[in-house]
Amino acid sequence: MIVYGYKKANDIHAGKWNGPGGKFGAGETPDKCVIREVYEESGLSVRDPKLCGLLMSPKFQGNDWYVFVFTVDEFTGELTDSPEGRSEWMPDEKVLDLNLWESDHVLMPWIQAGKFPSAKFEYEGDQMRGHLVVFHS
Image 1 (cartoon, rainbow, N blue to C red):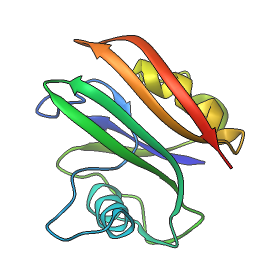
Image 2 (image 1 turned 90 degrees about the vertical axis):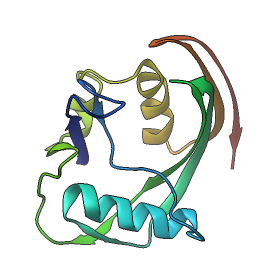
Image 3 (image 1 turned 60 degrees about the horizontal axis):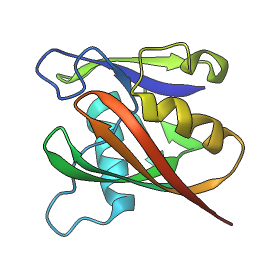
């Protein structure tokens, strides 16, 4: 099962389903950032996040985006909504049926197959124009 959130109108991802995440705090490591962001957006306290991908999207929505992708198997707490949107548990097989960013449709099968992508997704506005990927073991 995967936690996905439907983002509200005031979010850059408005109208899309997206995994919990966000920007680094000052001095924060990627691991600490994902732990904090998952808690803030879902109410779940996660332990031992596993890095499973690195992504970048140049000039996406006007900024260069660098994304650390994690999976988590251990957590405590109850799933809650946040000011950013509604959180829901999604069966793995249903995630690709959601209104996701195009790059998520490319990324999710890689992650589900246990691959570790280092990928660049190029967007023009809201449309993905292409991607490059290298897989690491």
